[in-house]
Length: 363
Image (tube, rainbow, N blue to C red; front, top):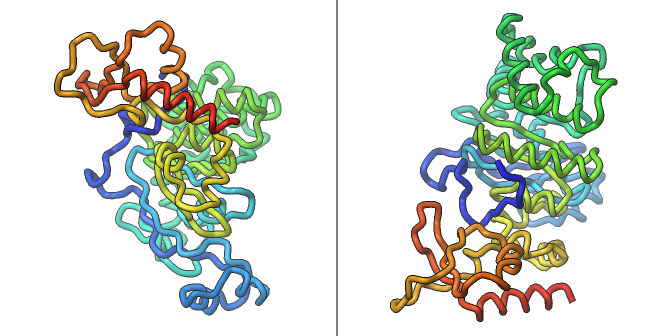
């Protein structure tokens, strides 16, 4: 897959359109309160008590009334600042934390209702997790680390070795199988963590700040790697990050959290163009819109007297690329979908307006 910026304006090829399949994950009325008598605190919050009111009782409401669905094959990003509740939320999805109230449905199971054996099965066969700090076993080889989830599951050595080798090849670590984690760079360690999740062959991957410990260049490479793998494998991925640019680049849809609550869910483009609250608007104000908004977001309907000499552009072409084309391309532009059907046009006026809007936004 090319490593250019990923457009969120249209469903990517791997994303299942809304309504065409049951959700891979569904959260309903999800609460997590740390402290005494959490059920009482949940009732107070449901009755309208503020976070400050209940915090004064010496408890911490980490997640409050979270509701969302994750579609099969999409990258669903949960984004928020430190302390917003996003890591607590992801740990309730696979039962590492039990909710104080509410439900998490994965397939036909309510995670909160699973016993210890059911949770082990969920984590080994349906959901794998990639952590921020790699969580590799230091005295086991790269190959053994990549195949460890399969070993826990009881898969025979020959099968798990082959699956681990295949997964390491997918993340670009062929030839490193016999090394120890201490011999790897940070980026390579995280690739092993991803290979372990891939070798487990779960449909769902949970990634908790998976790239946050990496320096910016390596982080960018890992984002490219993830997008490339997703193009080939179409996993269902829940990705936690505090980095807005990372969220905008990776997410098919993004859930923005603040103080335990999800305040908006939408594509990067939807959140930029129509922030639901002043908090979200402030959060996204410095985003480079030319790297998120696309031809599809500035086009107008095809005129009835459309001539046949438009310059074609894909609907997911970024505004930055449109601006770069403006000096040499013949205007108007014809915006096409993946099957070369004409969706709309971009006249010179729309392009100039988009440019002016970007300049105004930054200054």
